[in-house]
Image (cartoon, rainbow, N blue to C red; front, side, top):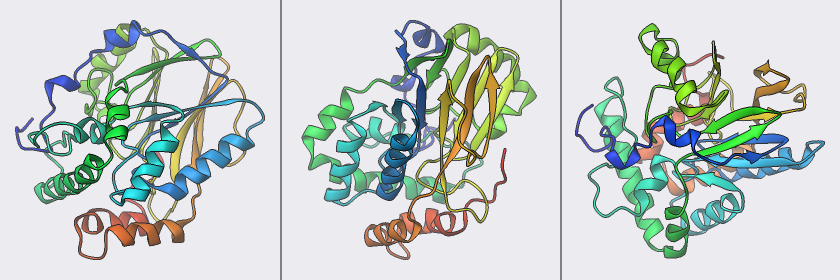
Length: 303
């Protein structure tokens, strides 16, 4: 891993899977794991409506990077006020907001295949968000109190909620490509034992995946606040429940009677584009890195 800002993974991001095993579990009937909201208020509106429409109680956990494009003061304040009313853990974006200096940049720990220009733009996006965050010390203090990991119990299934992977806040070993890498399989299998869980729910890498391994499942929701598939315009969240999902679920599995599915977040696209462009007009760093994906989705098909 390079020491370049945006590629490095700070030691303070390391917790180790054994820390997950020591956490007390929070019981839930239906759990929505929402990763990568990226400051998308219309997506948050939709998620809250989806939860309200469920036939029973829903527990929401935002597993990091709920901030990103929300560099306007009003949007930043609203995103954090509403997210922090639920369970939440930090992502690399939140972890770096209150840190002095910019040695880690955005804290993304991008792998080498991500172009240097993308990394540099992400560092500048984060620097602008950090300037906004500095004007809201109460929110910074609340974010600083958030944990990096959480543990839930749904229908007897033990669930680890992380941002990156089982060992690190910005780890990439739960990335869609890494989950299919045969060299990664021994570590993946062993990490279930180390964490003492049946399911990992993660995000961070911006592309969704659902993989069954001998010990259990790994569900990466990709992004709640951006499209995840080519020519599609919805985000995704991971729903884990004792009850089956509605017919709109994109894909999923059932494990020991517990339903694990990816639900589409069909937010108001026009409203989101308007809000995005107000902060990030054509030619800006975020526009260059993300607007094509916002309009057309990534070059990626359903896992």
